[in-house]
Length: 341
Image (cartoon, rainbow, N blue to C red; front, side):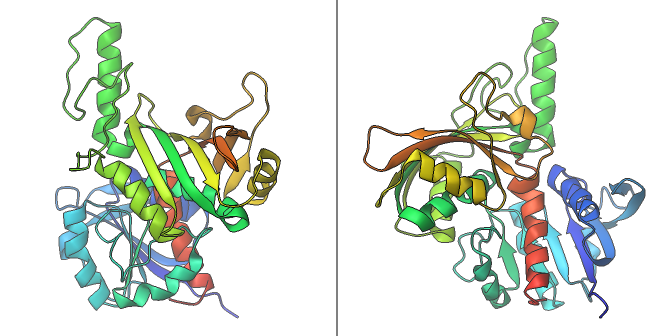
């Protein structure tokens, strides 16, 4: 039997996530009959890499006809996604959206394929599947097997998020500021509210009336939608001077018995997760080491003595891969395997 192939469009192909989507599609040899790179009119006519040996001509997203397209990977800003979805859906395409535009829409599945693939069956209401926030994705990958085993009551998470989560301009700002400090030039701020080089900024996204930032709210709301609305979550999200790779310190309290040995065994078997937890200097994974890797890495698993049935652990992942592009490609792969498209 001939394997089905799919026509793919990547919107935002010149950005960090769009480029990563193209790279991962090529790496994983996604069964594509055609891959089209889309970006703004300013970029149209240029080229972008697809795998090691190919380049794609960039087309104008605003003028593109989505007829016969199966999957559209949307790696563009929220306002552009909202304009893109009706056009693509009317043409019969499925939009896999990385933005926050549809994440909390009750008619749109919010999916991490290793955690809640069954939610994909609801895609047809709006022909959109949302991929969660990068910090949420890596956390729920670790929480899912633990919740299934002992039912999570409460999660406390502190994040240490790389500048690539704020885009290429943010990465450039970290580079410029770091260089400026070394050569004693003025340190200029454009993207971040404070100096990011050699500093930590306890704000990601805008503040809400509650005092939480939108990034913190996303981690709470998305975890509840993906896993279980009964789980209580509180988050503090911090931007740190790292180029790629988000880190999280996570404390979990369970309704039922759970100790560190049980947690370690469960996490060692969990899809998309790798446990590297040696109780010795360097026996853990840092963001530098996770960059370019597909898995989420868990270290520092230990008992939390402040609560009954509590554990804590360290979690790192490449926010551009599993935190964005890889999760989107896996959604398409899962939908193809489930014969939904």
